[in-house]
Image (spheres, rainbow, N blue to C red):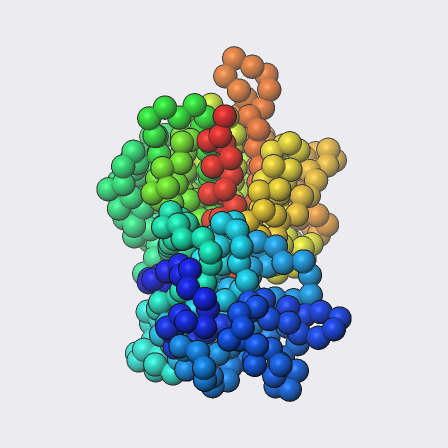
Length: 495
């Protein structure tokens, strides 16, 4: 993984030396207009309509240039809406994602504030991502993304650059883990990657293998993982800065490959199931980023890692698992495995009495049916869910609040255990039913009958982009949730 080198420049955009100067274009009723009003760019403004530039989002045109320091210019559309920080982030990312064959690009988007400058830095760095680990030959220079990006801005603040690099690194790290082949990334190797975070200040790592999981009563993780020759793990990452007054717990689903178990998926349904550990990758990257940023909040991340495989040792429909804490689950579908490992993680997180718990998981195909491929569903405690959605909106990640209605939990009644993991034969509201299941494992506040505030985020749709790119999102793993949870942690750190 590499993150492009970022620079800020207070020079007029035409004077910035780069391979391509990227100029933002706003779509208006009177025609396209340049976002940067430098006199030296006036000739380009006059030619916009002639070369077919409209200013629509994701529209990119590149032409040779003269009279400026860069030998070429590219016009990137900002769209026809009021230019906000998210539109700046989106546009900078779109340019960095689409523009190939230029090692150094400079972006002139008409920035004025520190907020917009940070957004441009983040978007450009996140957009300039490719995953070429398994390619026998690396992309030719003419097809390569920029490795150096300069943002034209009146704000010259190295702290903004540093923050953008940390956030981009966290996003890329998540994408890299999710894109990695499941034959190489499995519970033990995932746990090894997580152990590297112990080198960071105020971060501790604890890894529970099969013996420790059995001793701790983590029956969900053990049950899901028992069908694989590569055993499960539970990784606890603890970031404890001095003086932190609040504690936020994060729980991530880490099914490194989901075959469905004995409730076997069809062949086409298994393609992409390496993405089923996106939640665990997300919370791991959030811990790393917050430690580097020095966020003043205690964070605990629980990575629930298992490989769901069919074999003679795999759990069967009608088997009963005992989750951490003693609650029993009748397994009616082994392909509803994510909620089983997450149940253990939620109980473990609750035992530490945090101020709030947020879990994130590629939990249900029903989430895709309900919300499509770009929106994540957020369920749980109403106040916390609203906070999470507001934070997501602020950083430009599309989340949508969904209910856990009271009639759902009775649908999970079991004839022999405390709860069943599905309602057999039911096809309605699968995302919501899964959330109702998870809610059963969220603990109470210490010395109180109140449940710990909890939010569940289902990223089954937006974690993997199987279509064309948009904005700073390319094909494959997206890293959705990373920026939201970093921002949420920072919100918790404020008095």
